[in-house]
Length: 427
Ligand code: MG
Image (tube, rainbow, N blue to C red; front, side, top):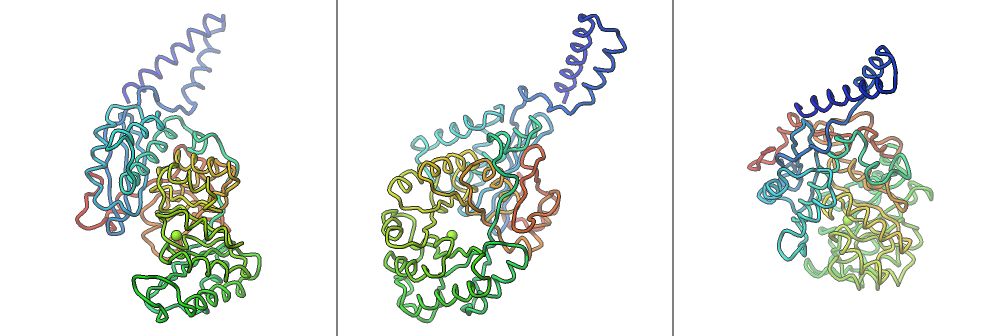
């Protein structure tokens, strides 16, 4: 703060001197100085330094929130998801590594962190999830320091808001009936959504052959068809329907389901089989007109290169809270765009992560749709733990914030009651 004040004072004096040199009267100069002083300023970005990174965990440890602290009363927030339980020491280690660094060098800091660990960056899983949270928080700091929204730092926007689809989260202890699917689709559409997603994998389906070998039986495939057919009948032809098999079935099952869904014109079939063997995705994609959407279990742009090269993905859906953050999201989107493949990020975060993803989504040409969750409407935690302006979504679109940085913040006091027991809380 002292630095900021002394710089501002220097700037004001410099303005007076310059005006005096131009032969202007004192009164003119003082007006200009007053206007300069009154204009919004971004602090002293070149003197900005990271002082610490702290973190907290929610959702039993599977949700990571980080805060990057600086020497100028500016901080940034970011989020990581999924395999983040147990990452506290990793966050702290990256915090020590970034101490005294200028947070504006986002790409360089990200690459330094990534390559400084084992095997020069050849790691994925929880390490990249932590990197994603920290990288997002770096953008938030940079935007606040420079007085611009994150999308501006990412090169500007192609659109003002992101179309979202509602993940209906219709996983229940009992097997949902087709009527349950139809009712959930109707509820989402009545909330203004123009697209919905359903899970087709059901561990409790009595027609399963085997609990480990998930080859779908004919009755299982018929059950899936009946559920989605009921949705299509309920919402009509103009609502997009996405379906997800969560990578649980084998390749021949995925192929059969994709074929059977063709008459229902779904927006995509997601992860019909596990993510490790992308040749299986290609085989399924080649066999059907149902678009195959994959990528929530791939890491960094490297995880998408071969997938796109061989034509294994009709649509890519990186999860930006675990695939590498916003810069990596842009790289994945731009890589996909070379193959005319749309970009439809997976999103299971809080509104911090959703808004972070939105900044990336508006900044790339091939954005298709972003995931949205019914829990934002039904679980009060997701509203209480964040601070933001306006509605979260409006008529099925998430408006990207124009405030400096991400434009959303963590309500640290409100979040405390939801903190995962036994985990550090912004330490
Ligand atoms: Mg999925």
